[in-house]
Amino acid sequence: KNNKHKLNKMSLYQNHPLQVYNSLSGKKENFKSIHEGQIGMYVCGPTVYSNVHLGNVRTFMSFDMIYRYLLHLGYKVRYVRNITDAGHLTDDGDVDNDRFVKQSRLEKLEPMEIVQKYTVDFHRVLETFNFLPPTIEPTATGHIIEQIELTQKLIETGFAYESQGSVYFDVLEYNKRGLNYGELNNRNIEDLLANTRDLDGQSEKRNPQDFALWKNASPAHIMRWNSPWGAGFPGWHLECTAMSTKYLGETFDIHGGGLDLKFPHHECEIAQGTACNGHKPVNYWMHTNMLTMNGLRMSKSTGNYILPMELLDGKNDFFEKAFDPSVVRFCFMQAHYRGVLDISNEAMVASEKGYNRLMEAMDTISKIETSSTSTVDITSWKKACYDAMNDDFNTTILIAQLFEAVRIINVLNDKKETISAADLAELKATLDIFVFDVLGLTNKKAEGNNNKLGSVIEMLIEMRMEARANKNWALSDEIRDKLAVLDIQLKDGKEGTSFTL
Ligand code: AMP
Ligand code: ZN
Image (cartoon, rainbow, N blue to C red; front, side, top):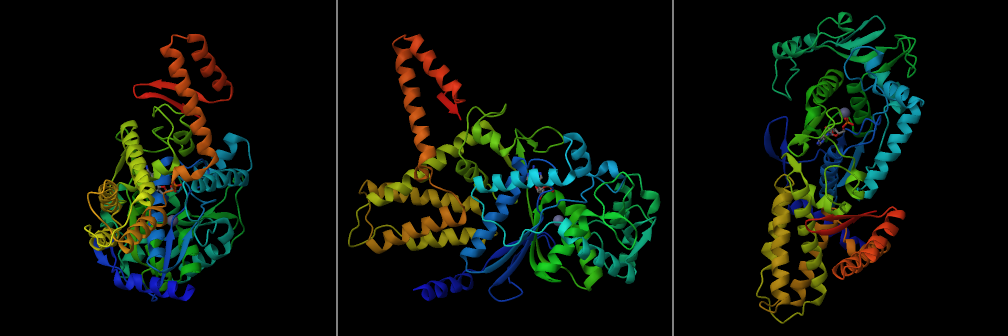
């Protein structure tokens, strides 16, 4: 039976040619993996110096969906998502720009305690949102030797130079050799020069657009490693080249990240890989678009951000109520990964309604009676679902198709159309695949305990409403206050009373 399952899956990607938008060409391309049936995918992971915000979650969730669909198509995927636990400077300047060192001073913790604290937080968030773990999750600090070796190789081949204990990539030299720094971003050297700010440490560079491969550590810099150039630490761009090459090879299939990493981070990765190995490191570059909140890009630095757990427990200034992780996931999946997505209270409430409607229909399926013939066309509906996903992972259209299934389920339930047993089984199996396996949603009702507590609180809210209708203010206040003691807050809003746990 297992073998048969495997065979069926093997043929899936062969029958469903996938189109992927490649940021490098700016076009949708037919996807072809380097090795038949296998995919190597690298996604830039978080810099673990603070909690991930909901914007970060959107980017990682888009790649989780992409990973899930590739698995569903039957590919064997090696999915590498790193943890940046060293070296991510705000620019190439001095020690004050090291995010880890800065945060460790602020929190009075060791830099590695900062790393541990926020790595644990990151994993907790991902688990809450039902992410599949990557197959390898390497850290920058675990690959210092590989980064030193790459730096040495780049010096030997003349693409990099040492300057006062630091090593820089020579961008002009790269272009002199007929290569094209700027190819991913359609920028030329003149633009880059014009956009480079005058920063500390730049006097060490031959040219302002050169970027650091290795930085000399001042005595105050506690995150330091010995190297041929003295004590120092690696540059941020280099870690991704070191780890992707090590686990996926000199050229691999897919490299992903948020749109804001396209420049300079990914441009530098292309230059490093090409300079080291003489050929491009990546076949398909994929970039996910930003999450905005109330129209403004979500970002730590501007303060326009919300932590994922604050959206789930309702304790925040932006949203009227708490939302279930699956509702957040449903909301994110309704947007195409390359489009900007704005979340607001209205958008979340609408997503919650949509999600509930979908889940109700998934429950209704079991009540549908079958007949000898079908008057509904499940085959073409199923094809439309695959067509949507094969068109650059278009989850917006996929979800529109899922609501077409909701409509079909409801007319069948009303006995206005008929369906055969085989078609009903096909409808259910296909829905399970796209709703649970590919979009990664979970059915709230199936979650048990958590939801039982929710139902009990709903019951108390109803009893409080009754008390208020009877002008029994003492009882109404007692219910509210006793729940508050248990840290369950009731919020009276336009659409009735909601609660936060
Ligand atoms: P960082 O930890 O800063 O390296 O960011 C982790 C990932 O989150 C990167 O791929 C960023 O591109 C992505 N990211 C940052 N801000 C947002 C946002 N507002 N919306 C979506 N993705 C974001
Ligand atoms: Zn990276």
